[in-house]
Amino acid sequence: MLRDSPLGLVLLSGVIGSGVGLAVALLHEVVVWAQATAFALPEGEQLGQAVVGDPWWRVLAIPVLGGLVLGLLVKLVRRWRPNDIVDPIEANALYGGKMSLIDSLRLTLATMLSNGSGASVGMEAAYTQAGSSIASALGQHLRLRRADLRTLVGCGAAAAIAAAYGAPLAGAFYAFELVLGGYTIATLAPIGAASVAAVAVANWLADPGIPLLFDRPVQIEGWDYAACGALGFLAGWLSIAAMQAVTVAERAFRALPVPVWLHPALGGLCVGLLALVVPQVMGAASPDTVPASLTGGAALLATVLAAKVAASAVSLGSGFRGGLFSASLLLGGVFAGLLSALAGGLLPEFGVDRNLLVLVGMGAVAAGIIGAPVTMVLLVLESTQDFWAASGVLIGVAVSTTIVRQFFGYSFATWRFHLRGVPIRGAYDIGWVSELTALRLMRADAKTILNTQTVETLRRLYPLGSAKMVYVVDGNGHYGGLIDMDLIHDPTQGEDGADRPVGELARHAGSFLLPGDDVRTVLNRFCGAEVEALPVLTARGDRRIVGYVTEAYALRRYSQELERRRGEELGERGLYGGD
Image 1 (cartoon, rainbow, N blue to C red):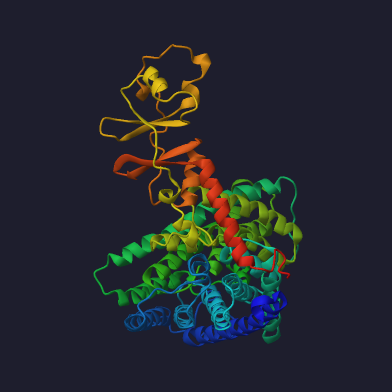
Image 2: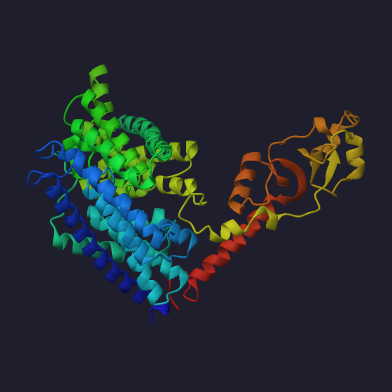
């Protein structure tokens, strides 16, 4: 049976990958045909590469009509199925890999309609949703273990990205980084089988080509890596700005005094108006459109960059469905081209290869927005077949993701979860993490002392060895800081200061835990405060102490629970999936 056969799971993953590769190829062809028909595109041209055919009003009418149809359909469908659609990351993080095939079909069709009508969104959201939901539905039908079901969801997502870009390694690591939340020996074979099978089927149906084939290999020398790092730094801030722009657009549309179902039509009008000036804003830019978008000077590139950010934000903020995977690649390429043009004009001796900067910009912005750094490095490597280019991209991606993580803390997917109130910052399964709270970890016998009492009184109340940490409170019992008793009983301190109020010695008054804080939040607080124990307060506005948590105990409980969960996932098969 599949429940007990690692080899059977690999074979099933290959079958799923083949099916997803077929589905991605068909969905792509349908959308390309719809765009060509709706916008009267010249033969061989993609939407966003060229000015659409006459008449000019078509550029305005198609997005508005598509948005109107989408808004009405969403309104009607929500009467039947009002629940939110669970995507692959959320499914693996909160629901053990369970996804609804019907709800995923809703999202796939909505994304196809959005992309086909010219909205500035990508099809990758539809691809991964369809692929993962097919895999999840099959796994649920076969009643697979929870761990195997989560793996199959990752297989569906990996196959979708691999087929969309002809990049099996990038597809596999997309699943590892975003959907599964990590790489293990047990998941390597299934994910790899799904990715390779998907690419094989997709390539059999269509000529894959090389999406990022430049006229020559890139040139990179020692100091060029510094330029890659600088570009990655700036790309990180652009990534944050692009994600925030979507939130600003959503709030702006919510503030409009019109029905919600009209929002996509208004968004389509905005995109159409932008497209009359900048055709590149329409549709989902694929990697091979990036070189074509780099023609022109700095002013034109700056216009394309600003217009694409605005169009993507308006599209998603108004209710069109899709993602920013493809758009982030175009944004990064145009951004790098703009910086290269500016540097070349200001510093004629600027000698960094422009093609290298374009690739670094694409990878760095995409990694910052999507949150999958290794995926972007491998995508560039597989698309360009240029190892040295990938080494430069690695520098930019590392810096970009560090900036985003430090100053923003979310990828685009997890940021949108955050706005919905879903506590996901990564692809790891946080269902059990949210249950392991400070309330469950704490001890109720916290040692306290009034802030007006003296050091001598503190020593007398808590002799050496009786308490590690004592918490200072005021007359109302409100927390005012903590005191490390090792320092109080340090014999080198002598009797000096024995009459000082303990409130003067209290520190970390702003470091505390709340009963609902999960174990990851608890551990992060310990890292920030650099203390061994923290008090648990009743609420942020009510600073009475109800208990305390030690870092050692929190780490031990977290490790125990993590090992138990891993043991459940591995079952009786062992680390390598054997008997």
